[in-house]
Length: 155
Image (cartoon, rainbow, N blue to C red; front, side):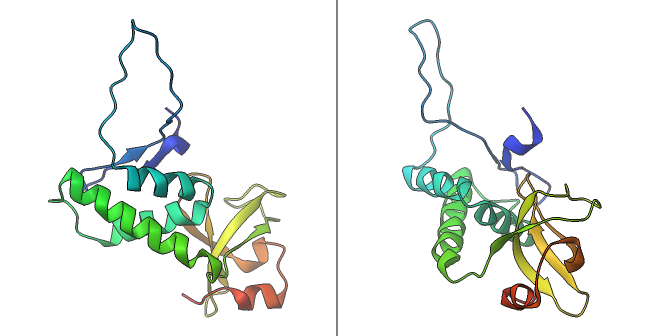
């Protein structure tokens, strides 16, 4: 399993995680598929979120901020479903967009990344990595004009 297949990893504040999944598996009679029972609502939210990486990254950030170490599997699934739906519904007005990277630091020059925030005091933008993490980098590391920077929500 590669790192990018780990959508929500368990960690000390939360014992549950979600890894990449497929609903299109076909197995013959000699094989058995062991799959946890994931609520259909969460499956629908995950499918949508995979098409909109900021949803996974921002939901992951909310997990890091919460104290979920005693949460049940059902509670975790419900938490994810609610948080993913909140972010997906806000996508229309979020102001998030993709921008081309020009610096080498932690970015691949020429690649596009989702930008999800801006720190005007530090001149840093928040961007979503391929592994669905939210990191910060200087705004100058992206091909951005002033109006694009101003359209990002200040954090």
